[in-house]
Amino acid sequence: MSAERFEATYEIESPVGLERAAAVVAGEQSTGTFVRLASETDELRDRAAARVEHIEVTGTSGTPALPCRLTVDTYERGLVRLSWPVDNIGPSLPNLMATIAGNLFELAEISAIRLIGLEVPERFAAALPGPAHGIEGTRQLMGVPEGPMIGTIIKPSIGLTVEDTAALVDTLAAAGVDFIKDDELQSSGPGNTLEDRARAVMDVLNRHADATGRKVMYAFNITGEIDEMAQRADLLERLGATCAMVSLNWVGLSGIRFLRDRSKLPLHGHRNGWGLMSRSPDIGISYPVQQKIWRMAGADHLHVNGLRNKFTEPDNLVKEAARAVQTALPGTARSALPVFSSGQTVWQMGECAAFLGNQDFLFCAGGGIMSHPDGPGAGVTSLRQAADAARAGIPVQDHAKDHPLLAAALATFEQGQH
Image 1: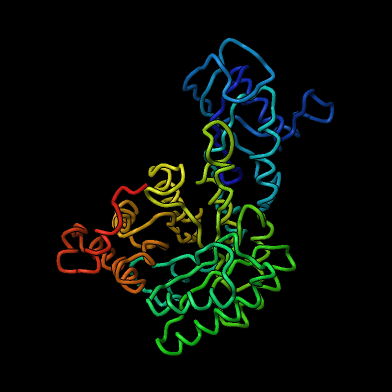
Image 2 (image 1 turned 45 degrees about the vertical axis):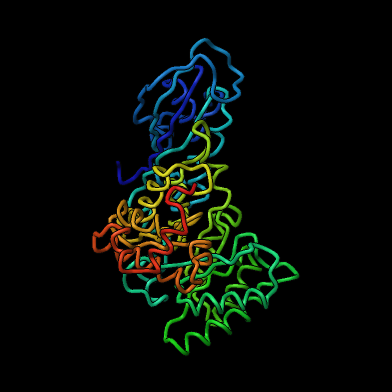
């Protein structure tokens, strides 16, 4: 890839053939329109036009994957890679997205299109903030120098009072958990405002920190308007909090960048809404592309779903997502922390470490902690024991023979529960 160009790869289906479709997308997303303009000179095109770098036909279909105005007997499908000069946009993520994921989804010459790959030059990535904390900074703030970080989520997601939330946090902190997060549905409703919740929760966590020397990280959901998020982040810093959570899709790239530039807190990126972009094989943006964009904007932690989760996503895509989050951005060491969640128990812990080849991840378990027959403290311990087994290369069932809390967890949670 040229140091002066960025590249996007698409899976495309077209009623006019891939070669024509690629040319249409390249024109629409750079110098062209539906007709050649007098001002679109050869010099201008050489300087600013998108280029078709590669076309690979992979198949055909007799019916369009998506509603399509153009009707033909055969729709051609395959991979198309386009590139653009970086100088068209400069180091701007919103304008990058307008270029690689703008009007192309509506083109009549397209009956399916999915953005599946993105490569940017080192100078582009280096001009953007990236994660301020990432894996190592998060470990330092949590006081967890090695092994997976063990987390959980406040449940019920919504409806708890401030006092209920603080009492649950007290229980979880006493259990030895490393991380707790608000659910994405809980922000700052009148029955449980962010300010009141933050004050109550941090009173609990600061008290535990005074006793243990280690402060549990709590990701408060500060999602809101820009001025609200600024005020909430400032409040969290004053209270001694160590993390802020945002709903990435809904605060937008500029919102993430604003918080990254303004606040010293790690940004816990919740990807709710990701299925809208990722679920269909025929339209949208793959998660490896989404996470790269969010990381360049400044997200430190990124959700990747979980193995055998409660959603529709298969394990191979969860693994692809987690590996992508850990992959450094071009020319930097800026990897981020993958966050596993959704029906996770001791059974998945070792598998996560095995396919990543490391234990640099946050493993969030709700029922996997709270539903342990010996209580939440035993739930946290059993997860650490499962991680110990993985690190030692011992099958988790064998390790459980002389670790009764792990054995109880294995018996309680079904291996293939989802």
